[in-house]
Length: 335
Image (cartoon, rainbow, N blue to C red):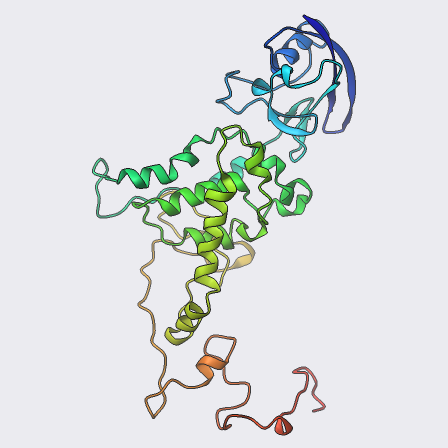
């Protein structure tokens, strides 16, 4: 047994400070043991969230020497004997009291994430999957929802204003898991992740992977593959040309609605926008309008916008003489 030095944050939403403590530490103990001894001997009102003490409930998330970690999985033997161990609450989320934070942001994002959509032509109990498909997403099922990845992600850690449009790495792996699922009936998982979950905000620094106590390769196996599939659909030049020719976009132009499992009614939209019915029957894709000569009009390929007129006019022969081009601002009425 030895006496070790600790700094523990005490306070609430109004403010607080780091208090210095000397606590006895036994061989083989973890940080959570020290907190329990501190509660028993010096600070009986110290608030700390915990449950299983086995690294499976994700309750005792905290920051230890600035690193997001689980208190029950951080052994005191990893620190030097003369080192002062600093214990603080998760920085990304509002403090309730002492080491307890309000992580309801994550549960809000969980409710917004579309759940598994069972196939209509397969009855419950008759679902069948190949083992290779099970193995692909099994890694993501190990998540214990400690929200350490959410806490360390700088998109919301350093920018509070991003919490509304950004779901975070925990729910990116959920979206990736369902996108890989061979029985999931929704075909717009990638589009939803890009448009409504803020997948584009992530710049793959791999901070989330580094702090995951279950060693899930969040960035390499979930976020990067999702980004690659989004880019393949949205930015590949051949796919874009095909969309122009067929007059259809793979991605929805409007903001994808927040939906819930098996919602039978149209989903209300903010700001008075028309509700979206996720169960509506989609019309077949429209073919491009052909000219009298049976050829595709030039403006279908030259314009940046779907179906827009050519900026040069329909009666101009190419190549265009640069001397005959007039450049003016669209809002300038004097020209």
